[in-house]
Image (cartoon, one colour):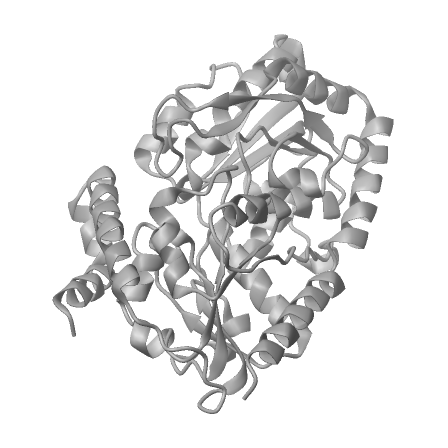
Length: 429
């Protein structure tokens, strides 16, 4: 085993200890350095083309199916789509470096295998970490298979630093046209849009959870914003939601009747301290920072009155789609991937100015654009939804019907079957 791979292996095994011993920012920089070095290994590699005589027809889904994050939920949705498609598939569990909480998803346990028996790899690892994954076992995983990257990205421009990733793939899938368009500017590989399916059963009877189980008041109109700290806090923009809420409900009498729930996944102590510092004492703000499996998160969404996302950019906006399907009104920035399933008729869409970044923010580079939502307009929507029960119910009903029609399982399955058929036609035995 190469020394670099030994380091990666030991880092993964010792992750809980490293998190306790070293500051988060130090570990983040260390991981970033490892990622940059890994890209050179991709460019040098010689990957053998698909050989259908060696492997069975079907798909190996490679990703962190257990992650309690947006990326983990995305991977689980793709797994469900593969199951519904009837295409044989297996799941290769890829454990990410970094501070990522994992859930116990027994539903997928019988599909998880280290064997990778099929001739197509669907690699659900975002490009910034693909080099590390490649470095850990490309000969065994990548060689003699047709390799598809399933990627999410939030801005119009795909980062040049990730271009080496194209060398180890045959094509890319994304869940939105917004992402596909950005990637197509940088590669001649096929880029295919495979929208997510969104399906949730409204919890009823014994399965239904209520506000008291989340330590939330039963007699207050609740707005919910939720985000994952690993998805970049500045992009998810919680400050904008807090600012809009303050404008919408400045009166102390009104504040006793409304509240804001902030759900943060994978937070650090510094993150919680920073957000709490933005909240005036008189505001009813309820923080939820414990890790929840997805079913419990959906129960939380079902308990509130409105979901708010004043993001600066979205790769899809899955929480918004799920809230709409549950019949919960939504307020969202009118830019990026979420606009592919949200309109002014079925949601409260907040106007935004596109602004250039004046510095690098992680993978978001200086000169790229993202949205700055109109806080005053968002505040107006908050107040309108609180005061207008009839309008609230109408918009929620239309949204639910739209998601049922346009983001159902059959659409996703049809896309996958059609594309896999083409791949095999182009790569005959």
